Structures are given as structure tokens and as C-alpha cells.
Image (tube, rainbow, N blue to C red; front, top):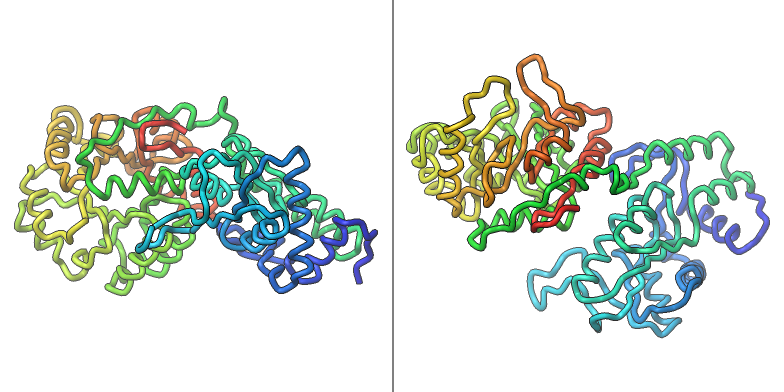
Length: 470
């Protein structure tokens, strides 16, 4: 039996604990991290008095420094009932932000009576990095609304406040995790050693973006504007980068289907692209191809099969149609191509590739002693630029064109070289050299926590591909 001093916050914490909205143990988070605490406020919808009480406390926190709000919007989905309570009780019009636009009808991302310039309050249940809040903020701002504040039931103290501040959003909080822990320990609901484990976990997994004076993104030069004739996949990739705020491509160089699908499903939320090497896989099948295609739709990323086609036209067509790789199913949005055989390779692939797919031309490589340099690279770039209807970008280590998307391979946290001559750049070095997308393999899939590694690379490397740096 828990023992509390029954002030307002203690009562709230006790109720959340009693309905198991706050749990302790060993849990796998959405990010893939193993956490000693799990917070799931979806349970509150089964307890109307608690839902109403939380909404009152949210409003109280939000208006503590004045009430400029004309509308309210809950982050989908758990916060929508909370925002609804505030809207009804305070007489404040509510807006609904969709997770994705409908494919029919008005295709709106924001539903409701949107009035340009009005101040909207964003409501959330729990924040870790603040990314979900920021996605909603960006959608609302895109509609012309003013968004300067967000209010949350519980802040996990893992960087959301700082991340939101840097985007011009003030975070108001009803509870912070440390006071929840202190209250539960004082009430003898949780032993001190468990609270200590949680505090250690939070401290070790702070996800605040580095300050502008220290961050890699401050060193990232803006990408050149996209040409009006850009391939639809290039436009889609830029949209993904902007929505997910990631320039990270995963090089999933694993050898089994189960490992590939598990890795991609866990890291998918943090990447804009997954690069595969199906010819090194032991059991790649049509089922694997279709499941990978489904994951790409689920997490919204592109798939690039690093086949490196490099032969005469007829041969590459037969290679593309090879039933072992199932490329004709369209699971790979892009394939890589060497320029060595000339433009006939590109033309031949255009004739057999599914409509809407494209290729990426390899004009430089990350290996020591590569022959893809100098005049070869210049000619390869010209070939890519003259086939913009099928070539989406180039693999290169330097800025080689003002119109082509640059994907830079061989990126790790520190510059180094392996025993086989692959030369690694740091994210900072890659972006200084003109990278738009960084390709990371072993730094993620060999990490004890691939998800945590992906988040780290993602945080270090985001820049907007529409011409501005982050």
C-alpha cells in the first residue's frame, strides 16, 4: 500500500501508478532502448475523472504566464482526448493534426477552422526528445498558425525542453520524471534502488541536440536548390528528410532475412533511406522483398539496392530481371550503377525498371586507391546530369555537382581506415565535403544498440535539402 501526502500532484502520481500508466521493470521502448521505466498514458481514457483532472492541470500550466491561445491541438493520438477536454471546458476551438494526409478528399494534414496568425497551444502526454511535438508544430506553422507553446503531462527529462526551445517553442509541464520518482519512493511504491536505476538511465540517454556553437549541423553548408525537372523520387526523398529530420541512410550489410527485417524495423523511424546488398544474403526471397517494401511504407524511407550494375546493356537487363533478386517487384526504389560502361547501362535499366524507380550513379568510392577519381569522376557526373529523368543522385565523397544529390558512403563517428582499405569520414567531414545524405553501416548494425547509434548519427547530421542548413 502506497503512503502519500495528498497534495494535488501526489494524488495525480498515485492514480497514474495505480492504473499502471507508470510501470517499473525492463521494457523495450519504441526506440529499441531497454528502459527500467515505462510510461503509457493511453490508459487514462478509461478513467474520465482522471482525464478531466489532467486536462485541468495542463491548462493551468499552459496559462501560468498568460493566455494568448485561440486554438488547441493534441499530438496524435494519446493527447487528443486531453485537448478535447480543454477545448470543451475552456470554449477553445480545437484543431486535429493527422499523422498522414488522406489519399482522397481534401488531403489535409490539419483539420478544423484554421485561421492564419492565430496562436495554437499544442498538447502532449509524454515527451522524450520532443520530436512528436515538433512534427505537430511544423504542420500547424505550415498552415499559417502561430505556435510558441506546448504543454505536456510528463517530461522524461531527456532533452525535449531544450530541443523545443531551439525551435522557438516553450514547454510547459505538469510533471517531470524526477519528481514522480521522488514521490513514488516517498510513498513506498518504488524502492530507492529502482529509482536510482531510472535516474541513471535518463542521465545516460539524454537526447538534447548539441548547442548551436558545438553542433555539426552548424557546420553543414546548405544544399543547392533542386532543379525544377527533378526526379519524383528526389522530391520524395527531400520530403522525407524534412518530415523525419534525418539525413541518415542505413547500409544494412547483413546476411540473413530475419536480421535485415529486424534491423530495418527498429532503425526505420530514424533514417531516410536503407541501402541493401541482397547478393551477400543467404536467404533473400520474394517474401523478404515484400516485407522490406512494407517496412519502407510503414516508416517512410526509400530502399536502395547497392547492386552496382556495370556491364553492357543486355547483360544488366538480364541481371535486373534475375528472379533471385526480385527487383522487378519494385521493392527497391533505387539501384546503384557504375559509369564505366557508359550511358547505355542507364538507358538499358530505364527500359526494364518498374515505373517510378530510378538509379544512383557511383562516381567516387570510399576505398583507398580507388580509380574513380579525376576525369573519370567528371565524365560520370556529366552522364548523371544528362539523365536526370532516371538518375536521382550520385555516390561521392566530395561535392561534384550543383544539381545532383550527393550520398556519401563510409561514415563513422570518427575518421579511420579498416584493414581492407575502406576510409571512413566523420559526419562533420562528410558534410563539409558536400554530403546531402550520409551512409552508415557498421557504425549502426555492429553497435550494441543500433537504434541508439542511429539516433546519434541522425542528431549529428540533420540538414534541410531545400536549401537551408539546420
